Amino acid sequence: MGTRMTRVKRVFAGFSSQTLYIMLLHESLSKQISVSFYEVYNRLGYGFLEKVYQNALYFELKDRGFEVIAQRRCTVFYKGKEVGEYFSDITINGIIILELKACKKLNKKHELQLQNYLKASSIELGFLLNFGHKPEFRRIVFQTITTLKYIQNF
Image (tube, rainbow, N blue to C red; front, top):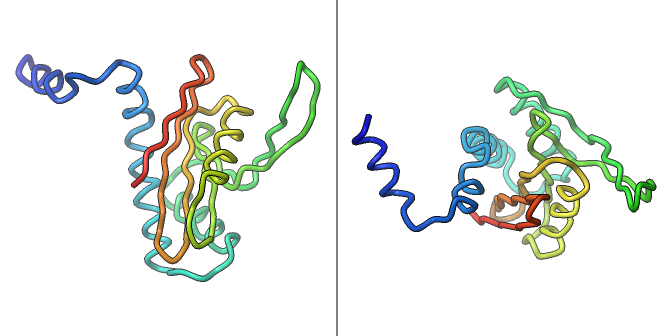
């Protein structure tokens, strides 16, 4: 037991506790999302509308036993007043938002869209998934307490 802990400490040496939190947030579920994304991409390929990929990923995640909600409504408030709403493409287990795209390449605007979705909700982790010519998978963490933003490309 002590040897394993020593190895774990050595592997994570030099990382701040905040960085470790970001790296490990919903790690096993994140891996399953990645596997599901590539499963759908490899089977359908490139060229369909976003809605086709959303439906396929919805069923893939459901088949893996996750609680999946498509087009979940989220209300945006300003000083206690409702000022708008958005609908997340897919929400998993109430703790992860998936924003799907079917475009040539992801850009900063897509990242900001997901960051705003995370900011407006109580959810800290989101994935930006592009079913474009080349598949793109980005993991975005938004911590409301420290307003730390972290984007990880795969």
